[in-house]
Image (cartoon, rainbow, N blue to C red; front, side, top):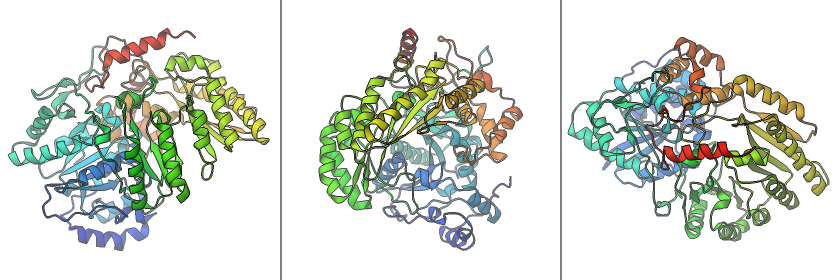
Length: 601
């Protein structure tokens, strides 16, 4: 792969002219690279304390749909003395042309090369985007490895769910910020400006940040040892300022922190073109497979009036005709009926629809079915996760098939004619009945829809491959084998008897790589870099993913995946990610794991 040369400094105006003249006419969807969107914030240099660029290591159409990015962008830009800009992973065609022309990657707001920012902050939402992190660093003119950077380089930070096991990306990131970022991002930014002004070696400056903030993890201050069994142990502090355990930051009062009401409106169609309002953070349920549930505790709510006011401000600032209510379990919002009544009364007359993802079939379902509209969405999405009540009790999913069928009955009577259901295979203690039960349940729903509507309905089962993620009660378990998943998928497809039922199984190679990167240690950094150097990009995209590259990378770096992926850990053994804590603590996860084992099958 041709690497970007160390180009001389280039002014933003000159960079923009060269890009517009020589590159944009030759790439797909050039509008994603030019900035200037509605509500984008461009600040003059006068009076600024620093500049930060938020990097989302996925395509523009994905990143612009991510609510967290809009939240942090608005939070930083509310400060008069900080400017926050954006960059996304460029497509392969853009990357090739930038390397050919010797031009650096830039921010959308000002066309400033990334190496000229004070801080470059990555949002790590999905493990399979790891190689895109390296693409952004390299094209931005920032050395890939933290130890190679000097005071002329930006501080490279990262947060998000993948930061809870930071080790696979540890050598590439200066520091990780764990937990909620609304308050902590600016705290770290202000502190970096201060310690940089105080002088000293870059490593000592990083150590001062680690000492100041309990939620900051600086990987270079730690050793990454292996245990006597050859498997990784939690990183051990090498520096007196390094904490043995990093605690996540928690935004205690969600209501006190304003929603972004002037979100940037993308130039091109994004995955989710709508107003998004986070009404609640955390989840009141105890699903034992769910990493988000562990990371987002405690449960916090916004007031109805706050949400409605934010909806109005966002509507007038964007012109969107859909409002999405965001949380891990939206229908568990304690004032749900009042909120739906207010939003429906005020926005439906304007032709604005209300969408409610993250639905749970509970006692509010009858009311919800009456409120949902089929004007733009004729389908309903639910996540039963397992097909049999016994398995749901084991994994902590507190619904029954009776609940699910009654919910679907209400939806069919309301006019819905398509149901999408999310399931998992490879769950702890799974049997053939649990697998075939997925098809049986879907066909029961299809027959119910046929009976109520008088014609066939479509039922789609999306079946993912279970990964025992860090910081969940199942973290001590190993992942099922490739052969097991392939056999389960064949069994599912053979079981289908109705044409109206569709089974879609997640790619096994993709799931295994996700498991490897989510459960891996610092040795995976070499694998990631090798795969990136040999062409791995956008591995989360089925048309881009090349599993052969990763197989070769593991072999070249002499990393054996089986102990990382498939071998369970003893309950008394330290885990490779124990140095990053969650609010409930390891003891809580251990108790939940034991409760799961006690469920009678």
